[in-house]
Length: 403
Image 1 (tube, rainbow, N blue to C red):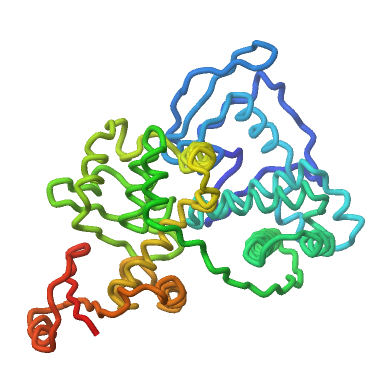
Image 2 (cartoon, helix red, strand yellow; image 1 turned 180 degrees about the vertical axis):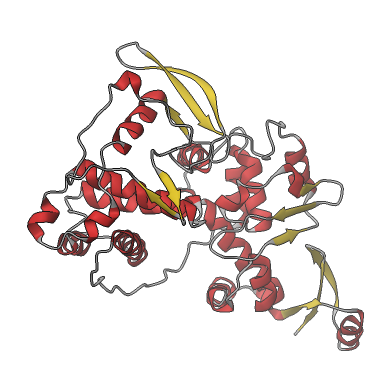
């Protein structure tokens, strides 16, 4: 835990009467932190050792909550930085440019550390904190002075980032400035939503068949449930009922609703049943970044082997877009698709209307209509006008008729 006290949701870091405290303790006397540097969890276990280039072995630790791995050397460096930092209240009283320039890089690191601890205390998601940390670090590496708003605006304007990337960085800077009491006029960029790439089902199945280890199960789960990668990695064994063919999404991202997916395929159920029970998570100690790295290598190899460069355009989130597009194609029920995806705002689901129209406008199977049956009375009424039973998706009966 950081040296200091937590009072009224804020972290108070002790500092001397001068602007910066320069009292250091010897490295050997710095106690190891009892919290994860990624998520702040206290559930840390030993995870073997690793050998440095100079053949010195260092202890490696792993967080049971976010699965972050880090070394003893990293923990000592975090403790060292936490002893040399400036309080956020002090920055609020620095008005002139000269005073702000007197703040050292270690002071800024201390402020960022306080800010991210504050976000954790406010209940922000770990992914939000990681995004904030990476955004601020990216600006610093690009040459920006974080305590100089004009410098930050100049760096952002000069970067060839997408509108979404710039929005994320600007939001991270705005939250940081709000914490330390600085004001700025954030730049305004227009967000253009790009049309996502939609592969054919055969290409997805080729990736699933050629992927190693646990990745085929992960991909099959994304294909059938349209979960986000961060949601799927959080699924626990208690969320899976193999007998009832049900998987629950109890840890949604981006403010989405929780969902229940039923009538899973026998292929997916067999894959889930074959997974080892390492801990409470169905994918064990694997992190999303580990899955991404392994999947990227496998995808590149298969794209070369099958001479299909389109495979390189498939990402984890691509399977969510594919599933949503296919659901709308078979049902033409936007509310059903929005509920399946967990969208609270149906405007986010309208994208799949455009995708479906353009992808299937030249196919002959457009000569039939599919509807969702929500009650017995509705099934009787649809049957009277020529609709016939089609298939069941997640416990929902679909009926169809030719136009």
